[in-house]
Amino acid sequence: MYIHLGEETTVRGREVIGIFDIENTSISKHTKEFFTKAEKNKWVEYVNFEMPKSFVVCEKDGEDTVYISPISAATLKKRIDKQRNPK
Image (cartoon, rainbow, N blue to C red; front, side, top):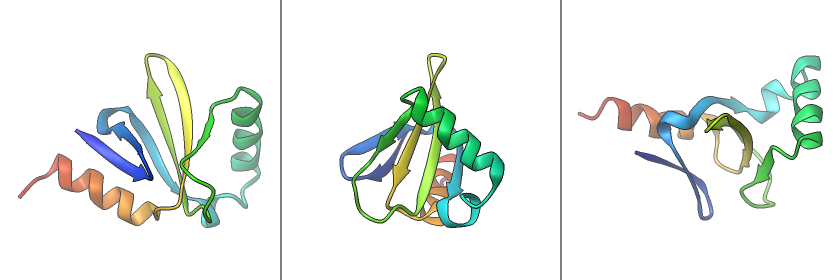
């Protein structure tokens, strides 16, 4: 199953390690260090250049990718929950 992150970007649900609200987490020293490392290693992919609301950390075949998304973390979480627990 796939999760739509915005624009034409989708990822497999099983590749998602975490979904984070960018506004609430970006003030942390640890998150800033993580973003610095991710940028340096070219792990960051921008879904588009609208105002970012969340970032999604994914792992595929041992490679990490950080997607910067204009979709809120709450909406992305609902999409994953809906796929994992269909009613």
